[in-house]
View 1 (cartoon, rainbow, N blue to C red):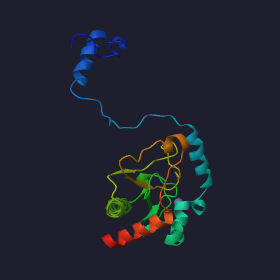
View 2 (spheres, rainbow, N blue to C red; view 1 turned 120 degrees about the vertical axis):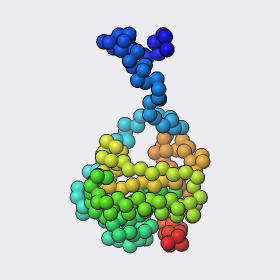
View 3 (cartoon, rainbow, N blue to C red; view 1 turned 90 degrees about the vertical axis):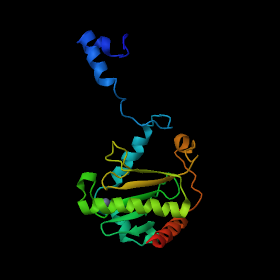
View 4 (cartoon, helix red, strand yellow; view 1 turned 135 degrees about the vertical axis):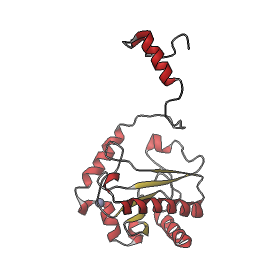
Length: 202
Ligand SMILES: [Zn+2]
């Protein structure tokens, strides 16, 4: 490579020989990373909101993901009840049809669930994608679990997996500048459509 292309080489105690060693190691591959279209914007004020949410969940009695299945599907916005896990509409959706897959058990961490729960949550995520495609034809999805308050979980005490349908152009400025998202249908209407779609695909 000749001239240094390693910005850190001159600070390495090993000097030129260390630089050559680094080049031999790093020139054969690129560092792992996934480019995306998001502009990075620090929003530390969101942490106050997230932490306030945690304080509402003292135990299983005050946990919305434990309470949900004790009420009717209509009242709780439940789409489907499985054996060890269920599917519910997110009350604070990023997009219409933003679903959450939750184990019935009040456990916080992905490593806490059993093999059976893991398998059923995965199967429910696949089914949720098929149902959303069937009902509302999204062109993309985000699937994910925020682990811990630090990881951005709104309710860190009870594990939940997000299934967010995406459409081209849905990432507008609303969520960034105003913490507001236009959802052009009521959650109740969306629940009816998705629950019907779920049954159709069974
Ligand atoms: Zn819970």
